[in-house]
Structures are given as structure tokens and as C-alpha cells.
Image (cartoon, rainbow, N blue to C red; front, side, top):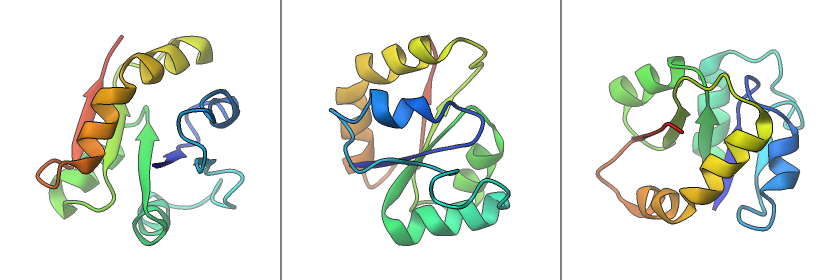
Amino acid sequence: MKLLIDENLSRHLVRRLSDLFAESQHVATAGLLRATDREIWEYARTGGFTIVTADGDFYELAVTQGSPPKVIWLRGCDYPTREAERLIRDQSVRITQFVDDTDRAVLILRP
């Protein structure tokens, strides 16, 4: 499973979560740091990524456009990177089930 970490989350999450999500990328390393949400959306869709974000904009795209890509929204994410990592790790089974569920486009996670 491949996660595409949005620019509003730390680049370090890719390395810190590599044991669970080995093919993940951060938008910065994908050359998308200054890209529009639509460009990031298209990159994720064609590359088979699930977008992980702390931004509600991708929620809106997922609701209006449907998936793929799927969106994991770390809602209210004003906590340190280690807390974001812990939340994703703690919810990794739920995340895997969500990605496999063809009926759902958004997963909202909160600490």
C-alpha cells in the first residue's frame, strides 16, 4: 500500500512509516511541493496512492469526485510528527481495510 503524504505533514513520516508502507512518498520528493490539489489528486490517482493529509481540501475532492484516490484525513492535526506517526501506526489495520473497501473514499482519523 502506497501513501502520498501531503505537504502539511512532515516528510519524516515516509521514513518513519516505511516498515508498514514501504512505497510511500511525500509530495516534496514527488516534485509536487508547489502543485495544486488537483495535480496532487491526479498524481495519486494514476500512481495508486492513498493521500494522507491534515487538510480538508482533499476531503472535499473525495466527496465530489469519489475514489480513486482515497483520502486519509488526519483531522485537527496540530500535533507533533511522532503523534501523527503513532496515530497512523495504531490505525494501520483500519487503514488497510479502508484502502481495500471499494465503497469508501475518505477515512477520518483523530487522536
